[in-house]
Image (cartoon, rainbow, N blue to C red; front, top):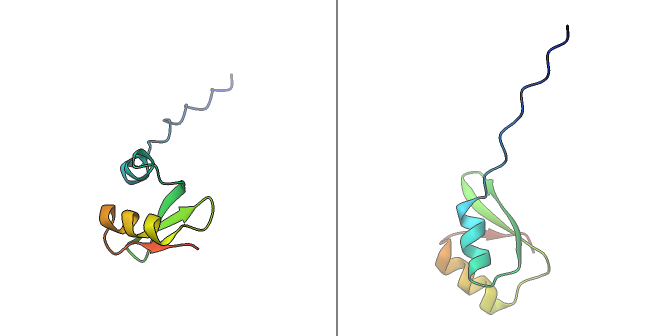
Length: 64
């Protein structure tokens, strides 16, 4: 009798992503590059959006 595969836990939302979106920023994902947060934007960010994101995640890189 074949066993059913064990269900995988649901992916947890990244707190950084939730925080950026709660501030109204149009962010698709937050990943890591060599230990530094990398913010992925849906569209190229304005300077104001970059500045706001840098206040939330100091030293973050941007994909645009």
